[in-house]
Image (tube, rainbow, N blue to C red; front, side, top):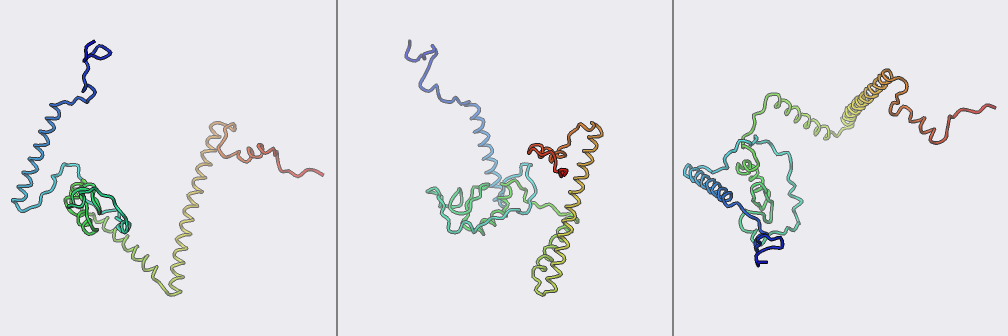
Length: 235
């Protein structure tokens, strides 16, 4: 047996276990990347010559910018310890000590810089937004005004101090609670009525042999405990 042959009679080498790469495929990827970088450098240079700031071009799948629904709690970072790489303290690029933006790969040292960054066009483009806000309709404006007015009234109701005003506020709240209880009670009654109608329909269609769920639970429990009834014996 030759030195380079395996136990199965096939040629073997020291590097046969390594992964084989398609050189043409990776060469094409490298050319595409170089072309994209060249186009980006050209766009940056043209924006600089025009006195404008370069932003990432739109790809067509971005959505309109909306108000932030979540809140960033910066107080939880007070007094905490964070482990960072050795070279993370230089500049904003990369993850370092502070508030990190994963979409832009930037770290900010305080909350004011973070808020300014989240409102910037760079962050909007990197998170898939166009930076433009959808124009609200008249109906949406009216709904927003009604919501703000209701919040204002709630704050005013919380600030009342006289006994008469407190009693009036309590009366209104009690009325709302009673109305909510009546609504829930009606929903329960309606659901029970529909279930009863379905049970009667099933008995009509299949006869008295059909067993409705929950109808004989009490009889089954008595039979399991050995009771046949609670009648009074004759003297």
